[in-house]
Structures are given as C-alpha cells and as structure tokens.
Length: 238
Image (cartoon, rainbow, N blue to C red; front, side):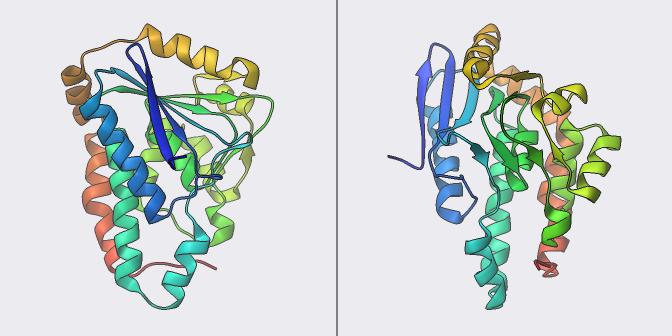
C-alpha cells in the first residue's frame, strides 16, 4: 500500500494518508507532495478531501524519532532541509487550486493540527480524537509561518490559549470556536464531508487566484519570515 494514495469520485478527489500515525518525515512528506501533484495534473477534480486510514489518528505531526537524531548529531543542513520540505507541504495545501477539506477522523496533534489549519474547511469526528498543539511541552516554538496558518483557522483568543497551555480540544469544542465546520460521529463523518465536497464545484483558476490573494500573508510568512529562524539554527527540542 502506498504511503499516500488517492481516488476520484466525480469532481471530488479523496486522498488517504496510509502511513500509520502519518508522522512527517521526508519519505512521507515527499509522498504527500507527489500525490497532490498527481491530483492536480492527472485529474479534473475541483474539490479535494484528505483523510487518514488510521482508525484513531489523522496525523501526529513531526516525526521526532526521525528529526531528533538529525539535530543531536548537529546535522544543521539536514534539519533545515527538513523544515523547508515541511514548508513546501504547507504552502502546497494553502495555495492548492481546489477547494480543500480535511476529514479529521482521529487525533490531530502538533504538526498534524497545523496541517489541518492549511485546509479551507475542516470536519472532525466527535466520538474520539483531540485537536492539540503540545509544542509548549515538547520545547518546539512555532515558526512564523506556522503561526500564520493557525491564525487562518483559529480565533486569536483560542489560538493563544491552545499554544500556551497545550490544551486538548474535542471536536465539539472546535466547532464551538469555529475551528472546524462541523463535528460528526465517525459513522457520519465521510458522508457529511462528501455531501459538502460534492456541493462545491468551482473553477480551478478562480480558486487558485483567490487563494493567492486571501492567503498572501501566510505564503509570505512561510516563504520569507521562516527563513531567518531556520537559518539561525533555532531548534530547541527537549
């Protein structure tokens, strides 16, 4: 089974993340990016849905088992290359010329929750799973581009609370603060997501241009403002 694959249902492309906890390491990130390229170049889909094959986890974010040894051996170039690759994925999703929907069918932690914020819409299962940023306890300050992505999806008052406390949010709490479009029982999640996805069928060039304009600040933060942080070796994982 591929780490990331897709299928098409009418004008909706459905990407499934098949890498267990879907932690971000170079192999997984490159597979995700290639699948996004395939959806754009090989299909006529106008809406994209992304979900996970794991029955409890959407994504647990950065693969610390891969990254920590890189940092411990002072492979600064390797760490920098990794964060630039991660930024490529965030940039690709936030500017993808299709309507994008995250079907969050389990835990979305750390980078996995940041990834969800890059989507245009988010639906989350209500019977299990948390949306959480534990970076405060992991000792990983957010890059400016990551903060910009969070502000896209989360009201500032709640974003500050989530970042500073590492609190775990349920789907119902996320819906209350408009972080997600809807909380759904797992038995209904994909039906709700697909009903919504099928209801939007917009032209790619228009969607792409609108995203460039709406998300200009995010794209700038990822492309430019993250660079000094990464270049100055500000990796503090403890």
